[in-house]
Image 1 (spheres, helix red, strand yellow):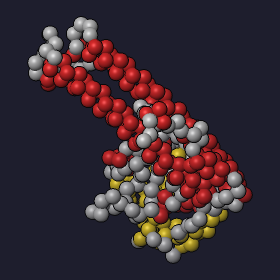
Image 2 (cartoon, helix red, strand yellow):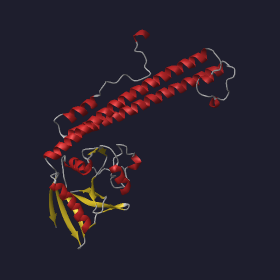
Image 3 (cartoon, helix red, strand yellow):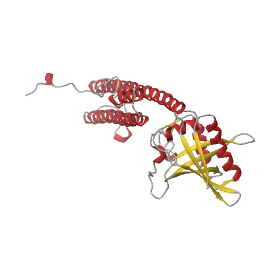
Image 4 (tube, helix red, strand yellow):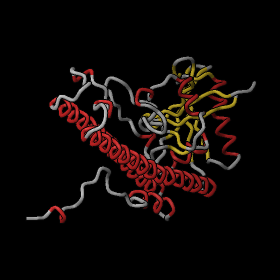
Length: 320
């Protein structure tokens, strides 16, 4: 039979975590190494999943401590009632929590006070451990963002992305613009070229998943500060989100393009992924419009042409 001295002591907080988790090590190793952008994003996704799992773990631990504290208070209340402690309120639900349950001095009062102190120390230790863990993840994510952004800039300088713009006239004054489907690292490079920011996911442009089959895919992921109820904003709210500070955009299924207007300001266009092509749409009121005026289509093409002349992309235009 195992003696009590041989048993492992009970812990009120989880075991200490390693200084850097395996997912964090993989995240930074892949970001710094010679692997592809896709590999770096895979490591980031894995690390984010581990980060969320740790958050859930700490939440369960806090709930366990709260439950333990509530149980002890209830047990002391019952013990006090059973021994007929003077001044004890009769209805259990009316009794206040904490040491006030046991008036004056005595074993029950001392027991409850010691238990509360022990639980308070356990909660403080758990909160410190969680804060340290989250800080390590935040530092790893920040370093990942910086490293990947630098790599994207090098890729853009060494090999600008290629685009093929297809013009389809609709009558004499209107047109539909398509851009041939791109692949590989190109969507990541284009997002950085158009916005100066990197996407939150490598395959963002071709993700047509939807949480509700009755609705089209949402234009945002529920991450990077976007709540799950805010993944389907109207065009003006979406534009404000895209223009907000930050290094990462949680966009999904499209590429935003901000095209200057002759009189100042910019129009919000997007390249929406549609099978073999991306369709150019412009924000208008509470929706996007795919049939462009001649001026809008020429201005969009002119924006890409300017980037082409600056050596930031390689553009081919085909009129049909």
